[in-house]
Length: 393
Image (tube, rainbow, N blue to C red; front, side):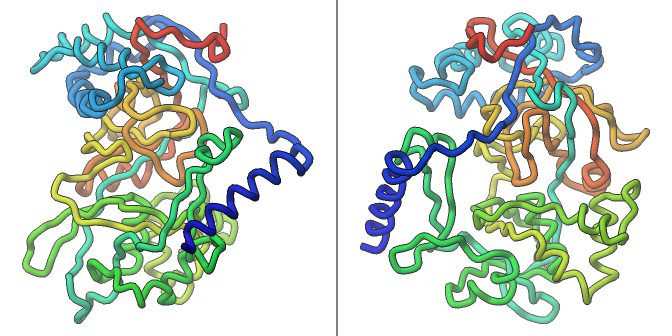
């Protein structure tokens, strides 16, 4: 009954907003603009000599497309039928030349631009960390990782009012009122203890914090075996990157900022670490998985070929040709075809992405250092007619 009361209250509030309250001043937001180009306009297209890996990643997204109603709109990019048809044309067990020919023949490239910031944007990296943990709270294993709480409620506001399409709120019910869910500091102080949600106990609260930023990881158990844990939910609080406040307080120089630098500072300042980590009110819940790191599209991520994007602007599964600065001179080139298969709390904006580097020390190193300027081109099936409002000459 309390959930029914909440929903009735929400409907009443929305009705009041639409009928009685004065219309708010519209907030100027960036809009996505596309400029049609040719492959010759993408300078690095020919330098990516392993598009076969991108095709393998795209096949995973195709499996999701095939489950959809063909008549449904695929964001602003035609219908699922268009994408199902293009998926049917992909070569099976392709060679590198066949993969290149597939994307060249059946897709049209468009330069992605923001109405505010143009074609250039920020591209960061993430990876699959490995932590030490135990199913029991014992010895050094003291820091809990939680499964998704039963009282965590997400509401798709677009189901209640057309002006709220694409908006959602997350919280918990208190009586007949939906209130914000516990933030990081409240959870770390024991707010979830009565629910018995602990699935694992790690040896480091800092490891847990970084694991939540990455969204998934590998867990090394005391017997040496390895299990996978993945994203199961988030508390609805905004993500706050703690790098900026560390720079502002003079703890880390801007030119030395990286995930490695943040970890080192947290580990060497134990008396201040909790206060700094709690600046990020976002908190992630996990589940044990057997199928490797899974992105938000619910497909297994492909190292260096899966990209996290802002879901408000780009749908999952679309191919994008990324051209960005490499994290270091010896890092692999970031001129490559990738597939949008994930998202993240820090990924905000049109020309913004987070490249999945995979697992291991090299992945951790490159992902931690990556803060690259770059741009990308969206590949659209040639059968899709894009609304002219998105096109820029």
